[in-house]
Length: 291
Image 1 (cartoon, rainbow, N blue to C red):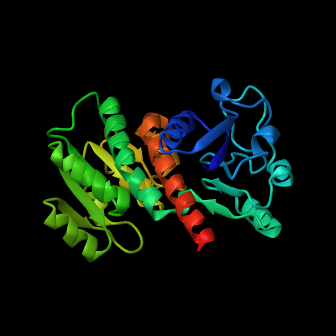
Image 2 (image 1 turned 90 degrees about the vertical axis):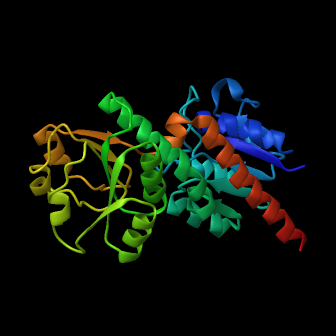
């Protein structure tokens, strides 16, 4: 039976622990408050086959993120000193310098945040969370709502489809003709974004809510001045995001920050996704070692 040492994290780790135990793993915890099974993180590592860090693994690049722990999280340098070479190290959004130090010690390290399967699984709760936040801000349902989705990647395509099924009038804004054609096949309206500079298609936009998934500032102050300030802006892209922050504030728009929605809004679902992804990697790793 594989033993997992779970260090730090939030509510999703608690649900992940339960799911992993249901799947036959032995899981011990530190840094999760009342869920802790050991007094110190050093004790946790003594008989573990795998050390499981949260997502993100760290907020300062120095310590493991432990928001539910009364004290401070353990330093990664200390963790690396105590971690046996044969123990795998898994985490989400692991700082590159941590990966470098682990590799230098010969530790088998894996960042599940980079897993295509993990990201695909999280696309669903991310899309649903974005819709929930938009409804709360608008104080109305999605049916009959005019919505715009910027981009048409993994999350955006699923989000646009969910909005359409809920009765929204959805327009997808994308650069690639392939993406626009795919969106039209799903019954969605489309507008083409310019490759560079300000897109006239965005200037004409009149939706009540705009969901951005493109990590590039598409919506400039020039464009925002053409929009109704009652329009709700939902940011789903990584920094710097798609909206001019200074213009959003100056012009009185409401911008909703949609980072890490699965863990924030649906910790049970996020925990199950984490557990299933980690379990698959550990099973594959075990098979590879035997092979």
